[in-house]
Length: 87
Image (cartoon, rainbow, N blue to C red; front, side):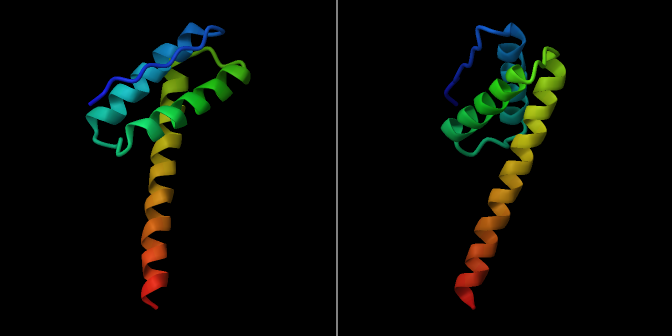
């Protein structure tokens, strides 16, 4: 697996949160598309920095939860789309 990094000069905790989230998602096999996951996590963590978040564990947990929800919703759309095509 390619190692994609993220950094936000405004908040070093964001880089640590990204690494924690990436490592967890990679270990659990949740990352299907590395580029898509990188962009998703970077966008979410950037938003958290803009909201004033500074706790790396809280940021990582939130990013993980949001990515898992995003992946589940994508799966539902794909399954739903296939069902609609079959009718």
